[in-house]
Length: 409
Image (cartoon, rainbow, N blue to C red; front, side):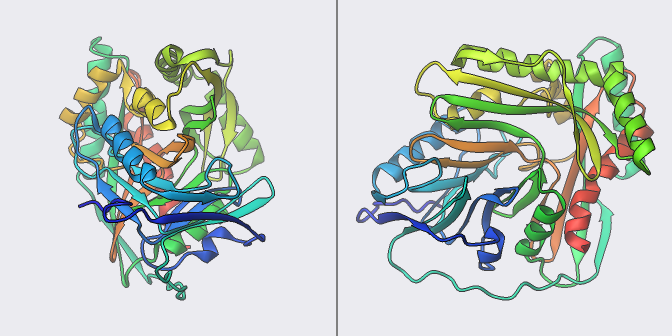
């Protein structure tokens, strides 16, 4: 079901500058919070002025853009700020698999934002907004197997590695899930607060129950300028500074991880080049050190050749080799055959878009799907021909710890 602005009459959208709101996440009411925050900046939203379940299929991003054009086009906008993220904004989450149901776009009733020393508030309509309620701890958390047990998933990894060695493909990214059950309903705001505090360099997000902190920026569009942060190649943090340095050096020198990263960069370059008048990719990756893992990372920048919106670029880029594999179409088929679960929004695009086509979208990694007392957690990694199933399981378990920390504190 969707509710569109202007179905009966155009609703007013008003954006005004406000004083520094402090912690953006502390402003969220309990019900249906939306968030995209990094280093204390970004956007949070609540309420629902418009919402739609995006139909699955290869044309879903074009369908979503058309729906947004209708919604935003029917609004009467009074925007005193006129910057990316002001005026009406939609938060969105798209499933990893284009054939899966679950993609959603939501235009909140209120959006509070802060960037570069400025803060603003956008409101839609004139109905009373929700009031803040205290955050409640979910209590004791218990865990159970998701779609596959750990030994079953190791077997899947071994099968995938064998198919890579046989030449069917170069790389496939396999994920697994873990089910967490709490004593009391899980308050998304608590998870967001813990994630933002522990992982400030990541993009902490919340859209329609999908909550997480992703280090991977799929695309940022500001006017014609675009940016992307590509991550591929991972190792856990060490037990101390010396071990950390040694692990980082080993990751940087690892032929397996470097090849995995090169595949991811080549995929992004091939996808973005037709859309861009100029595109720059680095010759060498850098090391991105997070509290739980280290990644090989590369910043990609470019300038769009025409009027493509951020959602058009998302459509061209997803799924990247970093979350699918190489060659990607073959990898997607292997994922469907071997993985044994529905990823839902995990490893799919998540983020926001404004009425001018600007926005930021990440890949929904280090995340969970929250409903009531239950949370389905996701983690995965890139599988190559020489991948060791036990090592891949350990990497996935290290990535699970992000959401386990959010649940347990």
